[in-house]
Image (cartoon, rainbow, N blue to C red):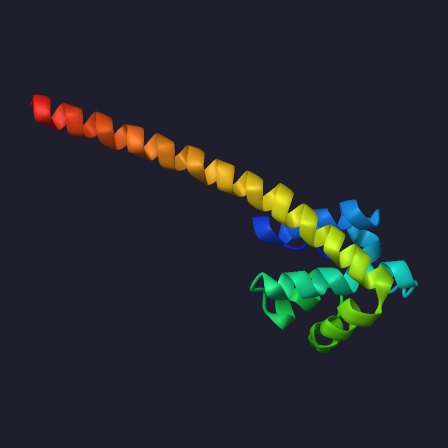
Length: 130
């Protein structure tokens, strides 16, 4: 299978879909059309698009043509409303993304802000002394 460069947000979403669905990315990207796999693939496609990924890039990441990705996003609203297995998995993935990944990312950013503020304070103190 072709090696794909993936950024941290794309990787996080892929790992969360793998975790929640129990399906490895190699199977999600495969040609397998079993319902649970197709749902995981569709949810990954929708969430990547919601995260700002282009349809072409999302297609590469889920192993489908970008037209399939556009179909995933078009069908999403109806799937959430009427298709319980899809809705359940989507909500579980979304919950894990918001409470796990984003929370960890915010904590990391806060640590970086605190470190920078401390560095600024040290520079100010050294400047005033000199």
